[in-house]
Image (cartoon, rainbow, N blue to C red):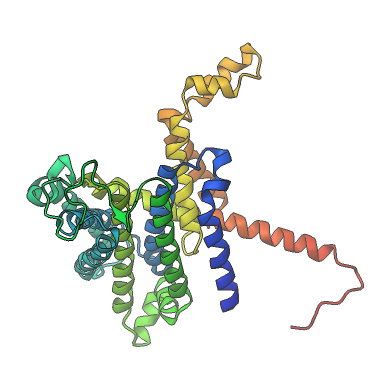
Length: 378
């Protein structure tokens, strides 16, 4: 049975989400995550995971090559800065267009196969892109050094071309660093979330779910699923390219490492951890992984001793020794344990846990109703 979701409920969800995103500096400060750099990562990787979820969550096609579009978007944004100026709007638009074209070419070939063969093809294309960016295309990508904006670059429409100081993207004179950079990324995330929400509720989204449910049955009915899956692949690649552009808007530097297979695997983990096929799940998964990466990895032995200082000495040192395995350089171990627990007990990700809690509260409230009350007829 499919639950019909009203437009009013969608707008309410978007409004609550927008308030939560725009107030993140306030409510994340108590847990040490309210500083601009980490907030920017939350927004950027949330957008990246949202786009990936449009492909994997709706169609079931698992791509291991989305980092290629992230890198293409990054390089396009930096070249926009070098040639046109430090305005982030043209950089973002060009990154979306370029990554969309690149995704169209890769998707046209990769989507001739499905299942593990599709995943291997996308991984192969991503690694080819990484090696090209790292070595062969050094005149365009600057190889292992990375591509950055230089004072000698043309920047045709940049009125501050002769200004001193670091070259930082700016919008109407506001530099895209610190909280200003976060709010720019946050607005882009909200736009991306709204578009994803409309896709989820549209007939196009229903067709993508049909592909995931039973593609063979679609073929038997005479419907060709390839145009739908290709469109989803291109849209997903455009989201990834936009996320790559945002990385360069907040820090004008593009490197080939963004196209490695590890970056593709990371977005897969984000989506599965939060809940594939849900709107909020991938964003929560991205925030959780980036929180672990930036907060848990910063813990050291001295910090742990301060945390467990309330314990007696004979307990403090063993506890610190054990906890030290899961923080600092060992933060991946914590993430691995968390991912294992969620996959075992919550196969639907964090959002499945949220829905279970919601159902539990509903049952509790229904039991609390007077026994003489009658339920309304449906």
